[in-house]
Every structure is written in C-alpha cells, then in structure tokens.
Length: 606
Image 1 (cartoon, rainbow, N blue to C red):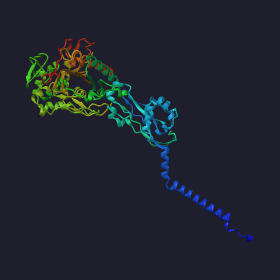
Image 2 (cartoon, rainbow, N blue to C red; image 1 turned 90 degrees about the vertical axis):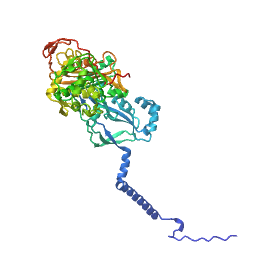
Image 3 (cartoon, rainbow, N blue to C red; image 1 turned 180 degrees about the horizontal axis):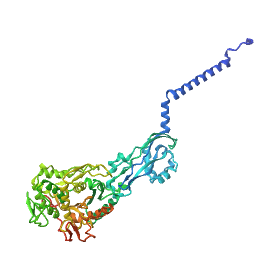
Image 4 (cartoon, helix red, strand yellow; image 1 turned 180 degrees about the vertical axis):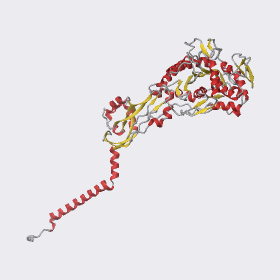
C-alpha cells in the first residue's frame, strides 16, 4: 500500500521558479532589439548617403544614367558661286542592348522585317554580342524607316541621330570632293584635306534610360556641340560639268583608257575645274572600283611630249642666244642622228625659226635648241616652272613628277628632254606651268579654295613670257599643229599639242600613246589655262591635236562665255570661217599633220 504524497501548500505572493521572464523584461528586450536595429539602419543610411555616397551613386548611374553623343552636321561645301556640292542630311541609326532584345525573342521576326534582314541572322548577331550593353543594328536609316523600327516598342531598341554626306553633282565632282566614311570623316579628296575644318566637334549629354533601355529624360549637357564650318571652293560647277561632259564623250569616242582635264584661273591659280574619266558616284562608293576613285589629275604622271616645248623656249629666250625669229635652225631632211638615236619629224620642215619650231612642233628643232643651251639653265628653268616639284596645292596624294638633276643628264637625255621625254608630270603641273606663261612669267601655287592665298613666284621676265604666248598662238593658226581643232570663234588661242609613246617595262610601247593638249585663252590677255590628257586612245586619231584639242576648244568656248570674258578676235564670226591674225584676215589653210614625239629609243613592242 503506497504512502500518500506530501503536498506543500501555496504561499500567497510567491512565484514559481519555472514561470519565465516577466512581461517587463520581455518588453525591455524587444525595445533593445528594435533600438539596435534602428541604429543599424541609421548607420547603414549614413554609410550609403554620406560615407559611400559617390560609390552607390555611380552604381545607380551605371544602370540608368548614360552619356550619349550629340551628332553635329558636317560643314557644307559650296562652289565659287554658292552652289552646294556636298551637304549633310540627318539620318537615324538603330542601336540595341542585345540581352534585352533577346529576352523578347518572340518579337525578333518583326524587328528583322523592319530592318530588312532575316530573323536567324539577327538572332545570331545579337547572341554574339549578348555581353555588350550597346551595338548597332543598322546605320544611317532614313528617319521614316527608322521610325517604323522604333514604333515596334521592343525593349532595348533605340535610335541615334547621325548625319550622312550627300553629293548633288555625283560623279561630276567626285574626284575633287572625295567622300566620307560611315562615321562622317573624310576619306579622299578635299573631304580628307579639310576634314578638321568640316567635321566640327560632336557634343555629349547625360540621359536616364528606363529598364527597357529607352531614354526617358535628358539630365544635362556635358559638352556643347560645335557644327563643322562651311567651305567655299574655287570650282565653278558649270565649267566642271561642261569639262566632264566633253571629256567623257571624247574618252568614249576614242575608246581610251582614261582622260583628265584641269582648268586654272591664270591670275590667281584657282582651280576652276578638274575632271577625270573614269569616275564614280560618291553617294554609292561601295559599288565603285579603286582605280575609278583615283584623281588622275594630281596622282598620275605622264611624259608631256611636245607640250614641254614652250618651257624649253623659256630657257632659250632667257639665255640670250635665241629670239622668236632667230637664229634659224636647219631641220632639213626631218632627221637628226644623235647619240645613236634617230630624232625625226613627220615632215621635212627645212629651215625654221624658233617660232617655227613651236608652230610645226619640230622635234629636230627642239633637240638642236636644247643642245645649244647651258644644261644648268635648262634644268633650272624646268624646275622653276614646277616640273619635278609638288605644286603645293594641298591635295592628298599629289605626285611631284620626276625630273633628273641636270648635272646627271647625258647628251641624248638632254636632247630628248627638249621635246618632252625623260621627265614626267601631272596634268595639274602642266596647267600650272602654262598659267605662269599666261600671267607674265609668274608661277602661282594652285588652290582649290576661292580667294585662297597662294604663293606666287616670278620665274621668267614678262617680256619673254609674252613672246612665248605669241609663239604658241601660231600653233592654232593655219599650218599649225593645233589648227583647226583648237579654234574658238571670236577668241585667239595660244596652245601646244603633244603626242608621245607611252613608257612601259623595257622601253616604249609601239601602239600606245598619250595625247596631250595645253593652252591659254584668250591669247591676247590670258585668263584661263587648261591641260587635257587622253591616255591611250584606240579609235580614231591618237594625236594630241585631234584627240584632245577638240575637248579643249569646246570646254574653253563655254567657259569664256560663262565667265563673260570678252572676245579678242572678232574677225572669225563663225567656226570654220576666216581667222583674224595680227596682219589682218588669214585663210583657213589646212594644217600639217601633227608631229609625233618619238620615244628616246627605238619603238619597243609591248
């Protein structure tokens, strides 16, 4: 039988040991914990807003604040009369945040259709750039086409304003102007030469983007945009177009490899026109061949042939040994065997004066004159007229040509230099030299800028320059090698033809020629100088007078009238009529066949 359990009676006011903390103590704990939490929050807030404020602000900005460029318009290029030759048009480039676009995979077909591509190609392109925060999807779309893309509202797709260059004259002015790349920087021609002037400086601004990558607010302008400066050229678009049209027709008619023409203002050295065939469309550069983009007028050299003879006469008359009418040079037989080479003319011209050597373009006469000149004087004269030197036009890629130092000339080399072999030059150099003859012996560095300051140097006496121009005028009169192909109604013309075999590896080609023509108008007071070069004409005549002379005459005829230059030879009222000479009207006797400047060695078969 179990014993009964002893029960301890409860004492009033005495708590049991197992009852736990009192409510007061629990409240105290809670208050302390809340206080510590609050203190931690305050400390954290102080750390975020004060101690490490810049760090967190940068982190936030990195996610929503961006610096974006402010596109600026490239400066406009004008011709000398204020006609636009190169303008910038606003375009829109479509950009993307690849990861955001890929997150909306179901909208890729719509986006691809708006961009003109295939969904699979677009997806592959984006996946390859998924780690980037920015990429271009399509550059320089028209604003209308770009809006069609942006209106889809696809997250991560944005538009960026840019500018694209447009050339109203297209291929007519392509070689002078050049073109710009996708980023609107000059790549060729004057666009490259004056890129810093035309480009300006893009601006920069900070913007806020939302979580879809769209700009929702402009915050501030970081850098002010500075648009490019305008540029006014010396080029006359009317004359440029006329030269282009006539040169293109001549090259196509003769089936030549190429053609070049340069026109200068005699008094200032300003380039009024410069054209080349073949050419290209600068508005669609990608479809053109590299050879077509070359400005042959400044980059390609050729042996000038008989167009050098007026420069030879500058040395001859400066020496004091020659005048326009004396002494006479015996070219009887039309051959001179010298240094193992047969220097010959196409006709037996007999005894000629120095003027007659120019009129008939006698190689034998020119070689005889060259051999009577002091070598140093002849070399210095050629150099003074710019041969073997850059013209300092500032055009990118300009060639300086080649002229060997005079002390190294061998006797045969000196003789053939008298009629244009053994040196080479550009069409711009040739036109510049003729302009110096027209301006009283003052050589101007050519410029493409209207009113541009150019270097001017007196290279021969004004009297001698005038005498040479008078001598050149006889080539366009009956019996001269440039008549009647260079006649211009009511204007006198001073010019010189040149027909030379083309150099090739191992010698000179037998049936490939360079047909050159250079001259001044009006001869009585020259205002315009021009040089024409047609390379390797295959059909019709390959003579400089017949192949290039008509281009000169047609273009200069139009240019004289466009510039309101008054006639100086009103005796000829119509083309083909009588020619006004210094002693009254002279007939229109057919000229002799043009002379071919023979190569300095026997003809070599290609």
